[in-house]
Image 1: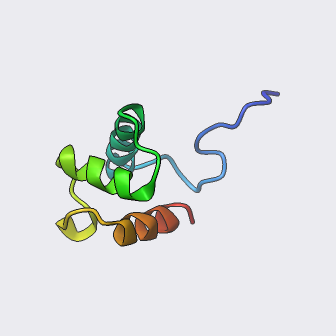
Image 2: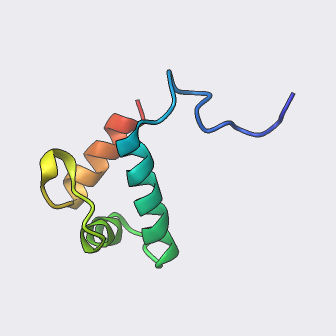
Amino acid sequence: MSLYLQPTQSREGAPNTYELQLANAIEQVFTNGAQAPEQLAAGLNELDVPGPEGEPWTVENFTAEMARLGK
């Protein structure tokens, strides 16, 4: 038995295309030095990653989307 968390073991299924693209973009934003939600939202906007409903990312919709995806 592996002692490492499998990325989907607490989910009902594998991540979809949107979730994978968003995760890759967030990883890039972190790599670029972002640490705070404001920086994450700005970084996603700089990468032209559309927010929920296609609007630009804000702290509010970023935290709401992370909460939604974390359920």
